[in-house]
Length: 332
Image 1: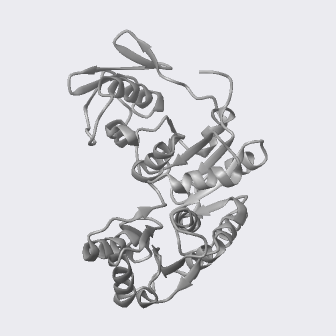
Image 2 (image 1 turned 180 degrees about the vertical axis):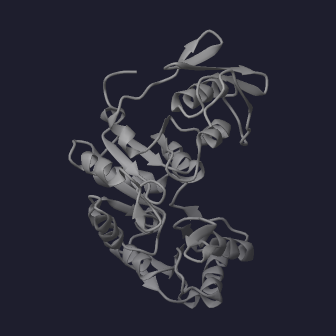
C-alpha cells in the first residue's frame, strides 16, 4: 500500500449511475460527497449510462437534484455513443431510420445524418435504442431496412430494465427481435462494448480513466473491453464473492467499498510463496477451494482471495465459484 489515494493514478473517473451514485430515488450514502471531491480535483469526472432515451441534460439535472456535480458535458449515454459509432460507418449525410427516442434522433442529426421514418425511404442505416412507445410496426420497419442490408447499430443490448412495478424488457429484447427476423447482428455502442467508454475519453481528452461500476457484466467488462482499469464498488449488484468467481474479462483491477474509497490508499495483495497477503489477511488455493486466513467482513480478505484464485486460474471463460474455507472464524 502506498500513501497515494487510488484516484491519484488516473486522469479521470468514469462513474456508472444506478448502484454507484444512487439506488432508487436516493443517493447512496457518501457518493455525492465523493463525486464533489473528484470534481474539485484535477481528475476529470464523467457519468456513463446505457440509457438512450434520456438526454444528457436530463440525466445531469437529476444528478444535480441529488447534490452531485453534473453538466450535460460530462454525461455520456449510449444515444450519443451510438450516433457517433454510426457516423463512423456511413458517409456524411447518409439517411438513417431511427428506431428509438427523440433523444436518439437528435443525437443522429447532430452527426449531420438525415433521419427518415420508413424502410420505404431506403435508409443507409438503422439505429435502434430504447423508447417505451416503440411497437411492432417500428420493429418491423427496422427489420425491413436491416434485412435489405442497411448498416445496423444498437445503442445497447440490456435485456431488462428496472421499473417501479418490477423488471421490464429492455432494448436488448427489441434488438433481439429484429435480429431474429433478419439473421443479422448489430454493431453495439453501449456497455459492455467499448465505444461508450472511448467516446467519453475522446470528448474529455483523457487517456487513463478509471471505470467505476457495480456490475461485472456491464461496467467492469465494458471498461476492460475499452482497455481501461476498473474498480468494482460494492454498493450495488455484485459482491466480493461474484468478483472472485468472475470470468477473466469481468475481473476488476480494484474492489472498493464505496466511492469514498477512491480517496484512500489502496492495499494491493502481495504474493508470499504459495499465498497472497493483503494487510492482515492471506489466501491460498487448494485445488478447487480458496483457504482464507482473515475476517469475512474485511475486504482485505477478499482481495487476497481474488489474487490467489485469479493467479491459479488466469484464463476462465465462464464464472466458477470456488469453495471458501476460512481458517479464522468469520464474524456474523
